[in-house]
Length: 327
Ligand SMILES: [Ca+2]
Image (cartoon, rainbow, N blue to C red; front, side):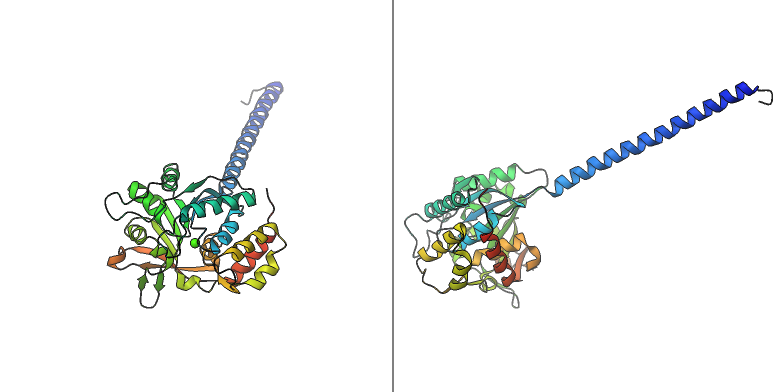
């Protein structure tokens, strides 16, 4: 090393410099690869978080005014992908029409047309579940629930929001019990006394299909319930609803649903179904608690809504309806 000539020393220096440059380039390339990887990873992550929540709706729309209000609100929600809209029966009611499911189906289709939204809509069972043997109502709606669950990615759950009798949901579980653990059901119905821990099934949605609610309570379906004794404070007055909605095409249609209903002359009414829709869309507006059901109601954990912010839900509803534009 001591005897190296100047030229050789320069050559060595150049060689070292080249190696250093290569080393720097290698580091820069590694950083670039890391940055590209991070960029792609974050991009994919953003795409994931922006993926819409899939929801299947099931409603007895022709029975009351509130279903149309609730459906209009969720159908326009940009973060939600409604995979199907099912019609359910209320044939068991003393004031039922000859074809309650068909009437609900027609109103569902009418609302979709009115909003210019194209999603599959299915007919449910025409009556409550059967008394014995194969109790299921084998309907397009029930098989659609099974199909949607079977199309889920591993470990996923299908969110079903049901606004009436549970005939279609329970029939789907009856036909294909394996789907139960992959269903997350949000439903309006039953009464719950939070102080005494008493669950009653005397309300309309329970009465329309007693077997269906019992079958689900004893299943593995994850249940989130807005009881009617809590939902009852969701009051809309006709005057305010008319003043706010009448000049908008969708608002005017919802007013017509109110006017045309059997007791359309009411000056105020409960918009029951909007409460469970908003509990899903805006979880911070509702208070939900786990409860353990009694042995005769499945003896398991389900979730009940205890309270919600009715003023926020009402204000949001009027604002969203009158700003809706057909796509
Ligand atoms: Ca309903």
